[in-house]
Length: 212
Image (cartoon, rainbow, N blue to C red; front, top):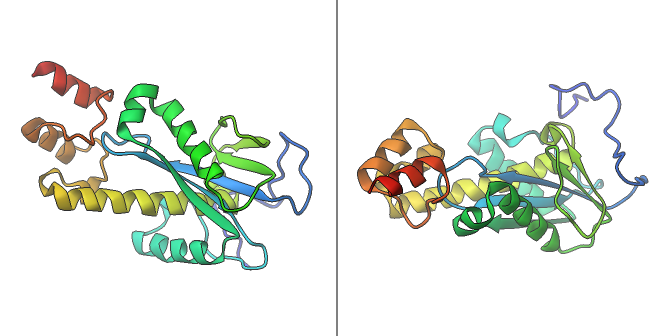
């Protein structure tokens, strides 16, 4: 069978080293989407997969088409032992900074899980302070299936929010750039000004506010 993560050398499966891992532990994978955009919440997801109900094709959400992400998100919600979303709104990003807001959203996702977990694996190189042991996994969305699943759920959820924002404010093009600082977004921001959902602490938005 083809490995679900062919871009990595996973001849040896990932084994947590930051805590006393044991086979069969209830582990949650956690990932975020939305650190870079100028608008909206940073959205996180926590997923506990069910070994008895495997999901083929899990991968880093950025490497999947939108259609494939949507289908996998359906399967994750259907087959996972537990999943939950967390978020930190734009105002919280401005108040806390994006790093701390992202960690807050991750904690919220884990706390919202419908089952208790024994440990958490987080995509990246640092972990928030959870109530259980945790380990950061660099490029974890391509190494740990539960983290890949979390990246997919978070991406699908945040993209849907950007499409909904586009329907309310179609001149900004949120359905295309999803809030990232593309040329189209920056031009619309200069022409139309920031929305309440824009992050005031981010450079292009802050500069525009200061110039007016």
